[in-house]
Image 1 (cartoon, rainbow, N blue to C red):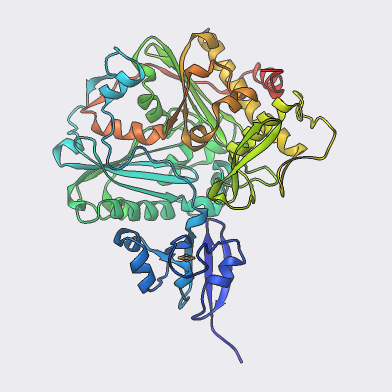
Image 2 (cartoon, helix red, strand yellow):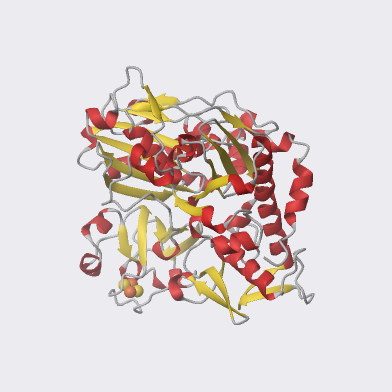
Length: 523
Ligand code: FES
């Protein structure tokens, strides 16, 4: 006897299951680590899954437990669901915390207000009229800002006053072609289409943001790194595949909704902001605006810590920036028990009376460790003397236990040394380029998800950052914030010259990198 099977793909793990038609999801999902906190009674809403493809009926328990907005976005209780067709489901428990910017009910700071916040008494950067270009948000009312990241997407609908009316976040569907920009470039060069999936996904996001008021959307502004810029625009990524990683197509790209197949007014302008150079894209350009780097004489830095660490340092007279291949350690990608910052990840580790005290996301049993937990754990090991300045585990053990079964291996510590060495060396060389010292820095803004969650004390203890604690701040999603500021500005920001420094071509980089690999002694 045969029975019909349906396929269920579980994101973000990309696990594929086959279930008999009409069967409950509980056993299959539980076998892959999904938890059912109320035992599948339909009361706690802790087992939510979002239907990304296919459909699941709305049950009575769904209607009683979830809001109309959640239901409209495709969320269902997994414990109540039966699979009647093939599905792609996003598991809420594993959902990454994707940084948007601000609470939807909070107005965003205007350019001037942020300038006051970041650099008191310094006038706003805006000075040049955007020739013949009406500000969308002022002329018709609504605009959409999108931060297109390699891993995640964050988008907001704003009105002409900067009020955030709706927020959408999602994983970048190009992840199916690899987690970092080099894998995406490779896939594109092999002939894979990475443009259509991202245009379709963003079109759906914009449609959800603007539901019922799409006719009022006058402008969409996207920011992202150079590879995202090229893949969205269907530009040739070949120049980004090899040294010196310089593409001739760094300019702003403009599209009509028709070009993209988006359901927006035909005269709505969709722009992908210009890149700076190398892998440094408009996400850093927007970050420079949001962090107010160009506003005054004080030296200010923006550091975006990811697989490609991006650093910009400067003031109103000039800005230098560089990207440095930190590798996947900050996202725990190369760590043997590494995982994303989702349920079961050790996100923080404190050292209390000589004992490690881990914090596990979701309060469950530890399943692995994410980037912020890794930095904390190594910092705690250095403080307790369990890890030496050269990175060796002091007692010669093969691993450093954090909270069993989660341990760090010697190779994991080495990966962190490589990552933090690349960032610290890049930072030192940019300061040298400016003829400046760490002591002359007014502020260091840590951008992005990792920068938001990493403990600054731990980052200092491992030597990832070298500056007084008082000048270092988590800055959140500066790319999205900067994009909104650019949308709201009636004039283009006049930025000073931005020099892109190729660290790979700097003969001093390797020596500085080697010097930065060791951990500081006795901080
Ligand atoms: S397990 Fe509690 S609602 Fe599904």
